[in-house]
Image 1 (tube, helix red, strand yellow):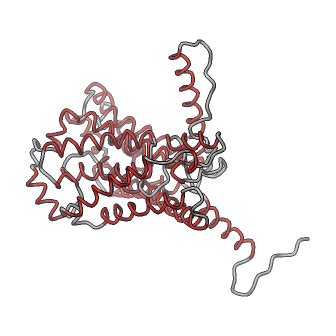
Image 2 (image 1 turned 180 degrees about the horizontal axis):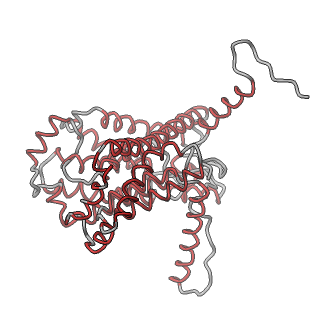
Image 3 (image 1 turned 45 degrees about the vertical axis):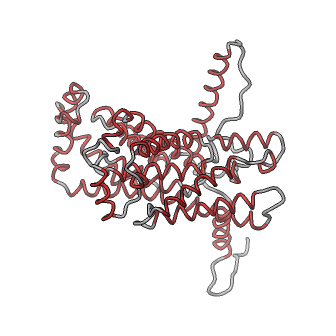
Length: 428
């Protein structure tokens, strides 16, 4: 019979102490959830991109000089609430068009995963600038996007499914460290240009008000320079290791905040619904189905509202799912089932009520809880479909050699990010 592990009086048992130290080591040495943060990055950048493209013909009425909420009114509101928006730096039509186009470009590049550290900051600036210019434009999904754009800045969301990861794989195949593969001219150029814009914005008082965004911008700018310096060939050493640990801790903390935010959204929404009489008698679902604004498909809305059983199931099912979801995280199987139900519900809302971008934003937030095994299979399937499509486009008639799946962390991640071993992440 084995002897029990003894420890000094007042200290933790050795087995518990070993588990705690292993947990701390895992959090410090690895950026957890690479697939989850990648799917969140793709989901929110795609949501914002599709919204900007759909509203491109109406951009001036929504956020620009032709809108009912004029530049003067926006300036008065922002002077009171201290919100951040670069659109208040100038009332020029050219400046507005430039900011809008840059917001679209940042969404595309973040979606592709190009220079994710830098583009996540530019993406955040684009989201905050347009949304804070006209805060009365939105359907609820804009609030989620607003918050997640800030959280994404602190994550290593380009470890997989990104051009950064692809660049790292190419360097790994050549058995050359990423920092030595080729001189990085794009990174310093981006840093210099964005630094000049940051300095100009500070000089004109464009960063006054809420200190959160200026602190993020002024904190990230020198941090990028330091990271680049310690990542150069022959440099870094212990400093690089320290920065890796700090980066992992910040990433994991931000990932936890994203998960907590999603749980908070559902918990508060569910408990508020429980207290409301409209959700107790079913009218909260029935009446929106008869509003023209929320009825893009009147026939479908009438079909759903004509069934009392359907209204009852949707009403009480929504409340039960939202209240119960945070507690299901302790059971993987129940959580996965409820996650599929919620994503299906949001897809139905997008079609029946005509709220596609709200639904896309919520589905992107839900995706942080998707199991790693499912996401890896999804990435492998996408890679095979891409290989077959390229083979057909080339017209060679033979299957193109398949590259490793875009999500396979088989080399050091780009921009100094350390790729996570395949076994690390959220279990299915």
